[in-house]
Image 1 (cartoon, rainbow, N blue to C red):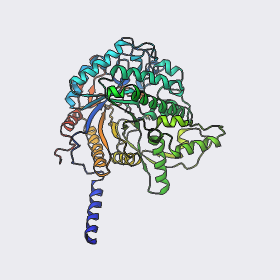
Image 2 (cartoon, protein in one colour):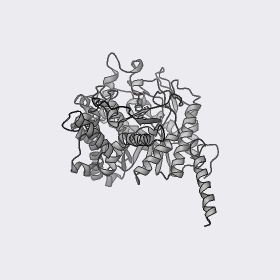
Image 3 (cartoon, rainbow, N blue to C red):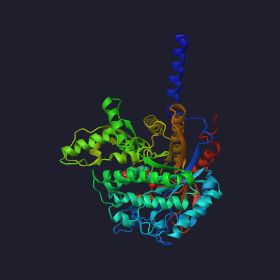
Image 4 (cartoon, rainbow, N blue to C red):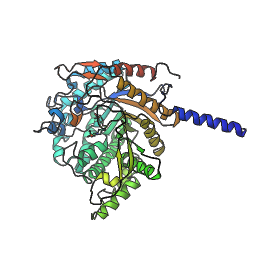
Length: 498
Ligand code: GBH
């Protein structure tokens, strides 16, 4: 080929990829077999906190404390009342036209004592009925085994910081596979290890509200990863042949954008991505923690006078156990942060943040949502997927959460539509231009629901829920109509090309 035409083509290619990057909406349909879904989690929607034999969990405990640590003293005692209204929820999912529904199981509803000495048949029945209703409407259940509601008995013993958790989790997972695995082919072991461990045991915002910064999160991570791996292997040994499903995990985090293009900021970005995504995905893919995490925590632990690293070590057997234990990786993505190295290192600071060696923030001027942590930055979706795709080649990815909050639950939620449209456009770009192997997308959330310590003040739903009415009346927002067009056309604009 003549040099001039090579030159011409490369200009064309670079023009096209610049143009297609970011602002302009991608007009290509999602592939035919690409799955669209919607998600909720047990404590956030079910209510019925003490009905039909359910045991107490950490969220029942936290929300009933006096004074309450939850905004407006809100509780999930009734929440969206999905325990009683699951048939209506399924009819909404039908209206949305989704391929799947991602929901989670309440551990203490199924095992009231937290342990497998007693299985609560009424709890099992509830999920059986939900699954049956979904399948009757041709909606695939995608089931999260653990989405933050832990039996209080187990939390009282230190929760995920105590390594007895590992086998208790495997016991619970076995009951789930046994009771539901004939009908459930997609499993997610844990929702967001970093929220559970870092926000939970490191910062004290979730789980038990107690915090041990720089220590608790690593104990929790270490146990969570081993619990995940053991549950995956147990499925493999005891159920995969007869049930033929897949088991994965959902990891969350911000895309971390270097605040300038200096090499220091690029390195800071890579480091923080390793501390959020790599911390979990690297062990699951390769068997052990990422090098930068190992090195940073080990080094600081020594300087702080610890005789052993605050980040525990896997034995060789555990490395073998953990490596290769995910059939897919779920990604929960919402937002982006900027990053730069920390100005000075105060070595007496024992914390995860100090271990990362970087500092991150979200610029004031970025578009707001109803949650202070959620700034709208659609380009970050493509960047993150591209980073994941190139760091973990051959790993199947699905977005298990993405969504936008406001504070009033308005039905005229054009901002939510715009968020979904721009994020999905960047996601489509990542598939088209960066070769990212993504097989599905999940909107968070089906319903306005109990947003943890923020109570009912932050609303993510495609459907509004009237929390003042005993009926918990559900009403479709404009975004629900938009999403139902998307699920049917696989197209985010009015008119798509194939
Ligand atoms: C998801 O977490 C959860 O899986 C889901 O249950 C939740 O409803 C949804 O997001 C929307 O928030 O307020 O400063 O304490 C997303 C990751 C981690 C983002 C915790 C919010 C709290 C920051 N989340 N983080 S703060």
